[in-house]
Amino acid sequence: MTLGIILAAIASMAVGAYWYSPKGFGQQWMKLTGLSKKDMKKMELSPSKAMLLGFLGALITAFVLDAIIQMTGVIALSDYLRLALLVFVGFMMPLTLGPYLWEGKKAKLFYINGSYWLVSMIAQSLVLFYL
Image (cartoon, rainbow, N blue to C red):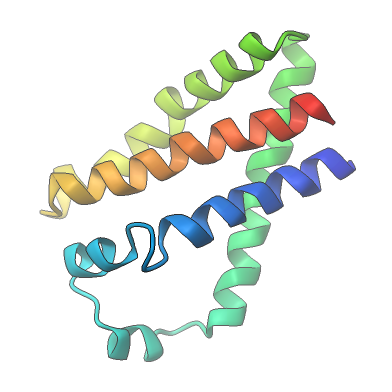
């Protein structure tokens, strides 16, 4: 695992930390998911375990994104960004759409979660490009 992959995963986590914070979309996200701060404290996973598993997920995403970059041989920044967009549209967006389609969640939740994945993929691509 390269330094670029590790830093790309950290970038993804940083985007998420802001995205779902009170300064980002955290308050709206909690309201749309029906969770309160009290509910969050009762969750099955402790915050540290959830963060660790989230980081492992971000590492896997960065690793796969880097593998696709290597396999396709892209070298220009525009190609890295195009690839991030394709991965988002082809994989992240359809998966994020499920709760809206099948679980009765609000479209606004889809937009919050989906746009996080788009920004996260762009951030990871930028890190991988510059490293």
